[in-house]
Length: 372
Ligand code: ACO
Image 1 (cartoon, protein in one colour):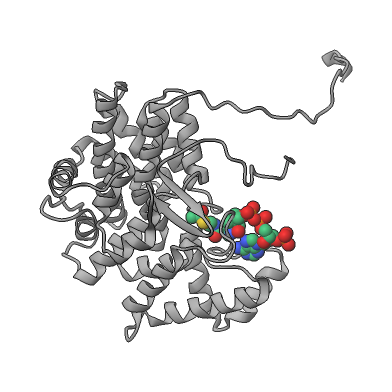
Image 2: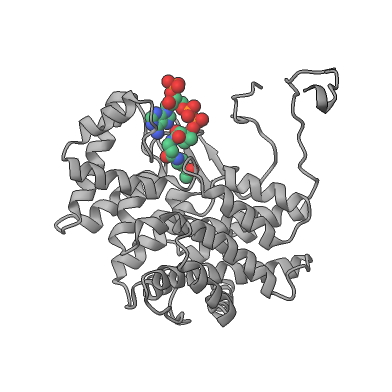
């Protein structure tokens, strides 16, 4: 293991939640293509990740009811979002502090029995869309919209964000994007959440840790930069020279490359298809076409594959989501995986505390301050 290895290919825990093998992704034994082809709902997938089996009809009905009953956030939390929305903070910083605040306002936040953690999990999961939609609207000077318990997770989010019920195709696109982002084995934010959980910290601390880790541009923060790049290319009118300049100056192209996948990111093809389906014949088709140009160029010039962040940028844009909150949408989905891993860590816990190899100087002589 070298200093630069970034723990590449190192196995550090056992999990039953998700697996990546031969460039395929599975959730609790179900290949994501099976879930996508059978039009699973995001709620079913959350249940699967948390319980390691698909719900029966009754289980799903109860699970959805519990989620929906917890969609609403308190006035106090909404006030805090309002204050933060006026401060030009990074949206992920607002999400991070607001999730932390949910823990402050939950009188049972420090209870860590399996039942208490499950209840906190439902509350956290259910409130994420409400927090994100409220922030997005308050930042634009609009009033937040109350959640609707008669709508699914995806439909309710788009309703709270845009102020009107979304078309079925849009709801289905978000539902599918949420499933594709739900879990991804030991990615950086999930690892961070598990380390935090291994200290027996509360679930709000663990999810806050994960949000901070997802924020960075080498992880979740890539998708908002993908759309910024597409806008710059549209302005310039020439994808090739734009990308060549970036590569010549050793810059990374956002939405390309992956630590684990080498031949394909199995989530990408679904997002590419959705981007096409949602844009063809509309004014948004330009984003799909530009994306194809960038993809072709990157394949030929560097042999690099698009990752989950690349086409999700176009999909989110078409759904009326501003690029500055793309990473929040990622978090709204990935929180399901974080929670699954936190619960799994708690059930069979041992403190995660690796070692480092010291490579600095040693046995130095202390020189008194007045002589330095
Ligand atoms: N653009 C240009 N070159 C790249 C890119 C890229 N996006 N990704 C990798 N490369 C090149 C590197 O420069 C390096 O080349 P070299 O061997 O000539 O030095 C080689 O490919 C290996 O790249 P590493 O950065 O060492 O690969 P690593 O596994 O450490 O990083 C990562 C993977 C962080 C995803 C990287 O590909 C990257 O920075 N991509 C852009 C950011 C991005 O899209 N992140 C989202 C990832 S998916 C997710 O988190 C949801």
